Image (cartoon, rainbow, N blue to C red; front, side, top):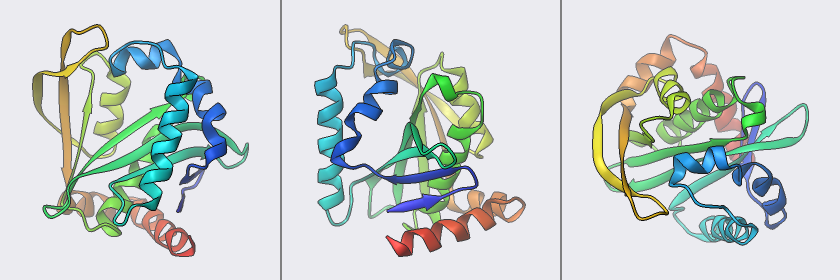
Length: 200
């Protein structure tokens, strides 16, 4: 599967992507927002193996896509949708981006594309996202793509050192996304996505 945006190509992972993923995913600054601990090469290979299993499942439980900068043909992150309640049309958005390519709007662009995919192709009703309370950058991404702050989940996440931490909850509904996209370029982006998905 491929989703094309103005600057990015979002594509399924292949078994050969482990090294490229590990190059940014093992960054301690990123892992501290994901519970801490060191991400080993074995951890990254296991993640790639899981992506291949998800590809073979029908329907897919998780859509995990590599974030590629088209002009450089370079992988800079991962973005995904986890289907949490299929019958209720609910999913969770998640993403990670190399710090080297931060503050350039790539995470916002990739996340916007995944919302469009979720609401148009998967016919979802609600997409939520969680982040570490101190992760200001992630909170800004959620707000930029139209998600609303819904509250703080107390000690819902277990860190690698055995301590608990809170998470901030954001979400957007299908009719909210439709209203937002009707007044922006998201409608055009959505058409590109659907055309790209049919080719895969």
